Length: 298
Image (cartoon, rainbow, N blue to C red; front, side):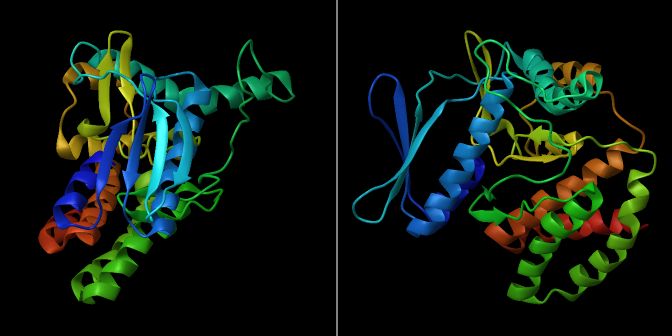
């Protein structure tokens, strides 16, 4: 979400302050509508907690969301000394794949044992999730994401990712071409998933280059907008803004190989992010959004 926060700051829509409270904690403060700010931070906190429980990849430990005098809201979390991703790009690919495979492995273990997957030493119990969604609202930028549980991924993605973005475009500009292309694309989407088995994977949800870092111990990811979805979705925004080396992709795909039709689905997932930027920052992202739809409906 950091990319969105920077852009929103430029537009004067929110004020983001980072303040180190003590040696071990840092606080983020938002001066948005207090309810909006709390919703954003609570979604980020729930996302960090979910990723933390998998013990697959390092994230800052979330501590508390608090309301401050004067209408601001603060999110206190563990302070980590982070530098830009460099030495640990391949390890990030490996650990991100581990995060994406975590729920699938729980399911396999559950099937094998025929009972609840229990706790290991020092672990918080994590249950297998057999649907797509998340237990709370998360925000990609300042816009809330609909995370209601669905048993079918195509339904989830069309109804709860693209449709809300299309509704916002319609409300703001009544863009006829976008509406007509989306009507065509909705009919085409199921064909992009023929023969693809999708097990819900816990996603970071906004994994671009500004939301990854490293310390001496390895990679760190932060500012998530998590939900259980298709693992390929994670790589969409990563490819849009750069920041990820070939070693990252090689390591990731050595654990989760590209399935048939990967490139077209990647474009479909990038459509969400272009439309999300369109709704945040204006029509400069309209062309990219429409081009993806035109290419996918061919």
